[in-house]
Image 1 (tube, rainbow, N blue to C red):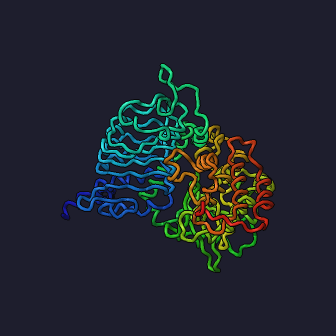
Image 2: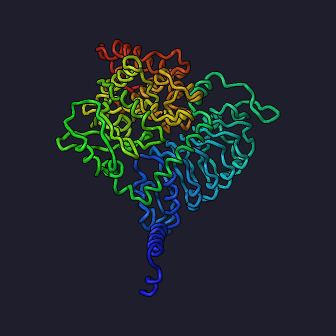
Image 3: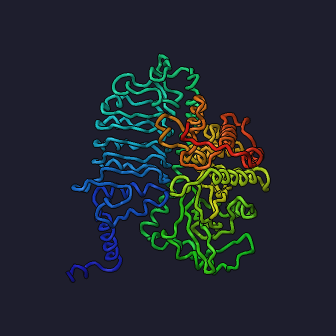
Length: 590
């Protein structure tokens, strides 16, 4: 053994040792585990779920979202729905050939659906709805003979429905609604059993399923549904714009990802946390002189932050909790630099954002300028996000609390639109961007960041700025953000607050609707009050009707019919927040 090691001297020995370490690390997992690690490397952002996937484990069976067969240790169920996952889906997903259920719905996946999924011949359920998948439906899905559920609705898929799908004889649930599909719907085989709801929101489709005649060349006619179908068609307009936009984002995101991944894999950035960001020339810029800390004090507290201190993650970056010695707590948002001109443009815009202070806006205190990223310092709000309060926490919000949150969000957005200089279009109004203090007072966060991180050359605003379900129809078609697109998003937010359901909740997505389409449907049946959250206490019928009327105006498909945010605030103050005789509405009695 000694002779063997003596033969390899200097750099060659080091190289061999490193290679052995790498090989050992890669091969300590089962083949399914390696496939999932490769799947993870394609993801550029999430809510932190995938940090629990450790390559040093012998198998992935203990990883969150992963279920294995108890005997074979093969992965049979992968459930990663609603975890803010963003990026393309790795073709290695096709190596999970014992997979029975794949659930990736309600995330931000983009790019093509991997044709390698056709290798997963044990699949019984495939749930890819509510993402940004583009391109055509892979014909290979027709290989999944055991498939019972196929839901790829609410994406940006184009092309025709493959005829290979007609041979999926076990299919009982099928939904391709709200895409850009075109051409005749295959009229033979298993697809004949599905009704119009499975296909709505695809203007180019034709066939007997949706009562649309086809041209001789297989294209769709110009006719459109009428009556109650038009309500569902309007909801189907909530689509992400063109696939070229998705491709542009994919290129930028992959470039960003590979740089971050290579460092993370070999530089162990996960362990060091923010140490690499705040060392080697980092500096602090503060916008307000009311904090008794030196730059050295702040950098010292930033350096040890790691994944244990993460309190949030989203499209704009990871958020850490920064606690100072005197008890003050701040939220630290890390944004990776994108290009060479990033610094000058970013700092100029941050100065503007840092000058804005308002009761209903989250205060930007300053930022850390490091060689690799920007670390934005915000006031910390102990109540978390409205998204968490509505959908994750056990504590229920009563009617007064919900009205108060709506009012706070409206006043914050109205200030951005009308009173601050320069005026700001938010571009990404949603429940996760409304933060709450300890008294459930609302603050609008992340204002200005969408424009700040926009790639001015490729104009990739429709993916970077905006979240599916909140986007105005004209914004998805043109990519141009205006005050009216913000107002539409605010209207969706109001519906989310009073219903307690996400804009793309499964209860109505299965019917080819989003929350606006659901409301339109309830209106046509004169059942609009049924939108109220049955768990919400203290609802008053007069204020409920007024809130619904306001929300309906905000989500009008015609931008000119939407009120200004000043008008929204005036309506809330005069018709909703003003005390009126009690007229409590018990939703259970209807």
